[in-house]
Image 1 (cartoon, one colour):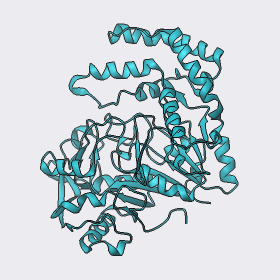
Image 2 (image 1 turned 45 degrees about the horizontal axis):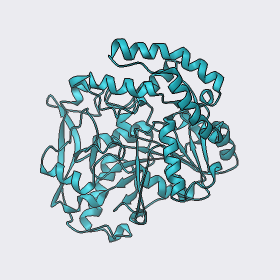
Image 3 (image 1 turned 120 degrees about the vertical axis):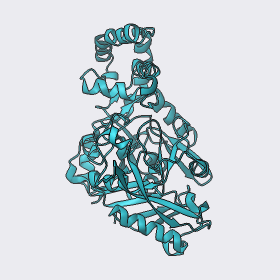
Image 4 (image 1 turned 90 degrees about the vertical axis):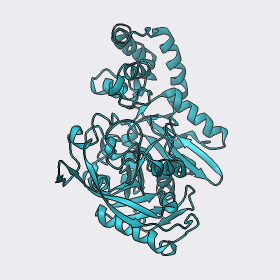
Length: 430
């Protein structure tokens, strides 16, 4: 049966939550495979707005199993707060429908404190971190100094691991960052309280997922952030600390890459980015402000205003290549309805030369000049449109032009935030 991976095709915030929510109808398992609570999905269900940071957005559907894989780093306090809110709203009444990988890594208080203190001392070299401790936690994972969920729910093992690593973290906090140290007893008692709550969700999710796929069930793999924020393939060092591309769905869940059948990249009809780093099509004028205001471009996790710019075909072609995209879900087309003309970046030049692909060098990327093509707008409200043929001719032409530039079919078009404001052109599960 089909397995579908959903990834961001730009710098994140593309509307993955809504797309995953729609595709969940056709899936049995919905699996988050990387990142932490530095990401957020905003969903509009009827008149209700739901923001999720860790739990897959499939949790809003009854009878689905949601899995948080080993590639995720988990802040237990945030997770518990999220499940509490879901239960208070009448959701997540069956705890067996939510599983946590026993192998995922736990964000500790010292991770968050180090994250914030480092950024404060970075001056002009700020990365734009959310201060949630994501990066330091992944550092410890790779450095083999991490504490996993299976460790946290075992009191003796947790105490041993915490004692083993806390002296080093306190040295960093006190001697390098000028901060006060963390208390062993405070952390131990707090996190053992979390362990009591989380224990019922812990499972060998790699095995669970493998059995489900073998039994013919359908899986939907949900990524966070976007392709250009991938730690290996993004605009390094202005990236996140995990593998946001489609390959991360295999390593972040423990299933074979051969199980990944369809890969859908989510892209806005324009581009946004949060934090520092190169952004060739960024608009630092009234047009950029109009995009921000009309599109509600403020972070679901931090509330930070997003940088806005015209659609960048160079970025999308790169995302198609590194992810092996089989389709693109285009979101927020309705936001462009206010413009008489709309620009599209078709390529870059640097030092007078036309570039074939995104430059790996940050210094080159920051000096790239976009090459624009201008298309006519449609100046018509499209939020009530239910079929592609019902869109204004100029809106259809815009979508078709983006499809040509991307070299990949557009399989969904979103014309508003609600579930019903979506035009499905192809269903990857069928």
